[in-house]
Length: 556
Image (cartoon, rainbow, N blue to C red; front, side, top):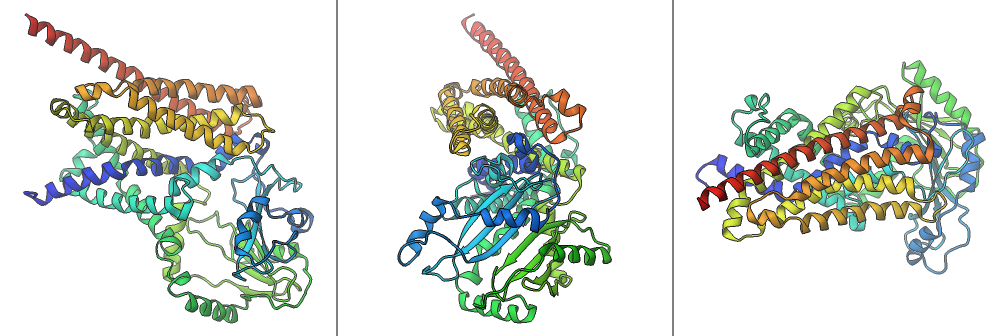
């Protein structure tokens, strides 16, 4: 079938990249945005535009907030089929309380699990979550969508397709394909070092597109390979190969019992009521222990297990923003007395490697320059895939036009939808965020509808305007959607100013970079869209002049 190994690799690179490149484009683009997900959250929810806050006092802030929590009616309805008999009106037995924050979070996420009487699976709990202002414990409305951490971030690894974790499996398959495409790309391009320095924008369109495709692929090759691999490793044990919870279920339970005996952290409740000692004193003791070991003392995760039971314990985990590895450094206390139970020992060499790879992928560390390099790497991946689409269409559209095939037209319409359409959808959700009334019920759902609706309109537009591709010409939808991106980008920044008063001069003057940075990034994207639209218009005019000249010569 193939005359050489390089030809086989070229076929694999082309078709694997084409079929699943649409998914990878979303993974790269929204992964790049997710690097600053907390900053996007602050832009999207003006009431959270405060400075990041440390973990607050448990006794003064967290405990009252936890005691107010209760599962939502939606969670109760979802749990009802898994219960023998009627659901209780109240859930008084608390399985766990937990609070999570990062050095970039101005708000605090709280989670509570409750035991369900007569549940078919006694170990299954019903959960509630809320977000509070850590300064005073004031709860924030639960229908406010955290666009950065609650939508863009899950979009890059699950496409927000939650049914049977379908999105996670699709993205995982795409990551495998990406690794194959990277290897095949290296095999295809024997002069890879030269391509590191080669970009000829003045050459013919096909040559310049291929140069940009090669350049963005080669420059960020280690980044692309590393993130595809570590993404697969992070989800491997939880979703792709969950042997401990499926085929090895009994062995998994036995391991949990043995671990509880060895660590002193009970796996189950004792059934004996007990009180709760001062948690703030436990946190202070944990911080003293970290300081004695020359470690930063920020608390990132606080967990109370088996609350109100003799087997209850409190776990205090260090934020670990001072290092790349995703470490917890947990210290555990008996809940009823505050007595120290255990300090987590240093990880094994394999464990340290896992912590480093996971931390480097999730980037919870405090390093702003490296974060921007992540953004550039993600956008380089998106540009690499986008130019791959363009090259595929440009190389084949004239041939398809002569054959009467619609293949190039279909791929071009999908490429427009994936590249410019995805950017339009992103701006669309931000426009909706600023225009929708603050007291609108299910406001977050309406913002999601705006995202998918804008993307659907971009798809329809790309398809309707793709007829010239079937004649070997350029699709005007590329140019038109670039103009739409520019208009929406300016609109988003203007709407932020009009609805909150936080215009660029104000945010820059007081150094509030979370909002100023988002506005500047959006304007930069709009500027690039204008430059692209102008260039595409010139190319279209030049192509029209060449066609007119050739027709005139043919008539002569």
